Image (cartoon, rainbow, N blue to C red; front, side):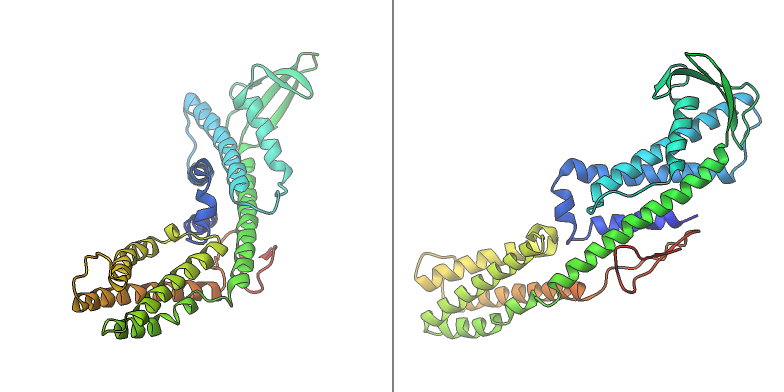
Length: 334
């Protein structure tokens, strides 16, 4: 069943999106916890698939080992899902099916703290009935301190199937919520174009080149125009919650722009500069023009992303299909 795999894959891509990454990576521990939770959720999913669809050992010791293992896998997956939800889910909590609580109780009694378990019902000891372990489950003998022992069959195979379905449902809600928030974020900035701040750059280069032919005042105006465009671009990125570091190419271009821009500023002011002649200044200006053009192209790509809908995912799961039409807080079709 690939559904949980596709959902966690979607979350991986969401977390590494330059528009989302700055918020998540702001807390380094939380950032690493997200990916640890995703890894554990998928590792335990593989374990559960193997248990449900694989063969069951005939050796008694191997049977106990397999049973203890699957109970622990169920518990670990629940822990991973809880931490993942807390890390990326922004709007509150998700209601979970009681079957997950039942699984935790059975795990603690049968494979967690069986000999001494202190719960609301009081202190009790538990043990698996010898010879009762099969792929379907096992019989659990419970004996509270107050007396009145009891036997209960723990349907492990059924619980594993139900938890996988519930895990898929919960993760579907998380993805839908993130998609809805992403849609709202895109809608908010859709009409505020980053590329527009570079509209005046081309005219600035015209004036810069004119200035390098003798009218240095025009050249200084062009250079100042470039700095204003860079500042406006950085401001609009910050309004979106994005830093220049969010995109490696953007950070690199700013570094490529800063040095020639600084040298041109010095040259036009008559200060000591690496530029020794007007011809040399033209070479610097042409290199600067190429970097600005690349930055404008990147800004346009970001604008295109904001103008589009959040990425869709066809989960392929047994109970739901996530759709992209009319994004809203709950768009899972059952």
